[in-house]
Amino acid sequence: MSLDHPPRIAPLAPPYGPDVAAALAKWMLAGSLMEPLKLFRTLYQNPHLSSRIRPLERCT
Image (cartoon, rainbow, N blue to C red; front, side, top):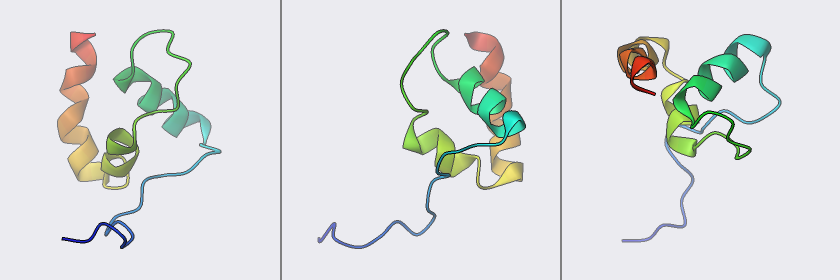
């Protein structure tokens, strides 16, 4: 299996709008200086799917 192909759904790329940046920050560890994980940036491409993940924000 080759991994040389682009992803089927590309993750969001910076710069992010204020709303997107705030939502992605909630999925990261508090105070993290790392760029949001590609997993989260890909999930955020689909509003319905990302809304299903939002309950996890309360777990941090």
